[in-house]
Amino acid sequence: MKNSFTLLLSLLLFASIANGQTYVSFELEDTPAHASDLVGIRGSIPPLSWYETYPMEQMDGRYFVELDFSANEGEELEFKFVYQSSPDADVNWENMDNRTLSLSAEEVSYTGNWDEPYYRDPSTLPMLSVEALQADYALIETIFREVHPGTYRYLSEEELTINLAKLKETFSNPLSVSEAYLALNKFIATIKCGHTASPLYNQSADVTAMLFYGPDKLPFTFQWLDGRMIVELDATVLNILPTGTEILKINGYSTYDILKIMCQYVPSDGPANNPKDGMLSLRGYPWRYELFDAAFHLLIPPGESGYEIQYLSPNES
Image 1 (cartoon, rainbow, N blue to C red):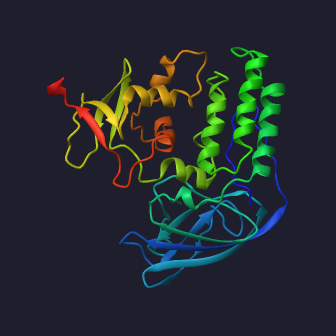
Image 2: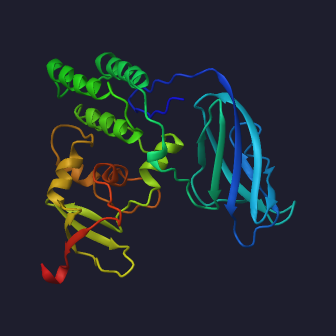
Image 3: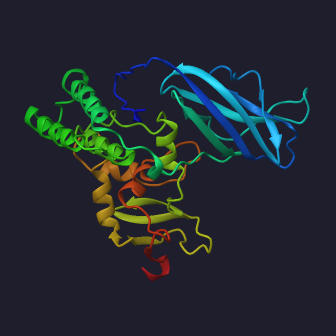
């Protein structure tokens, strides 16, 4: 099955694949302490529904159900686990975004915990084949040569051809999902259009998990001020990074180099980097994903023990 990421443009092209049968085994390992035996699932594709609960069976404190879905291969199932205190009581929903699962003509197992986003280690995802990547490349080239209205606002035909050739060369070898995601974003940034991006909100379940749900996020929020990474809110266990702390290096990379590296993957209108500074600040907004969280750990992954951070406290500056 081809894994892919989405490309958001002024026009969004979408191809559907023939119907397939997917057998999914769901397991809920953890539920709220006050949950009763009336635990189940609601979702977007039959046999699930958003209006009726499909019950799960309990065994040793866990809940199970096995379902067959007839849907387009690669179609995204959205669902949530739910429970009721009694058959006539209100439904209690998970307090999180809808869970998603890519359906395919194969058996799939899904294990989750109540109110905890699903995470699949990106190293366990299958490599993207050259055939699939080249098919994506052909679509990307068509979009930017024939469809996108602003391709040549900041680029010449020669520059576009050079940038496309680099992407095609990269897509000429099998790639991991993260490698392909970065390569695509690096190309998109060369267009210098703030309305053209690989979006954060409508990716597949595996890509969303890879970008946002891993144990690879920095324990603070910050903003860039004149190229310096300045802490706004501290989330470290010992509260060692008070507001105003300047982060100097992360895993040996100076923050100057970090910003320079990341700007290569961020789209913005025109060649200036100043708008990118704001886009790459990490503000900790609870209602949206942020670009820094999506890309930083792919470009500068944590070591075995996490990130090594060098900093300058406010009273030392």
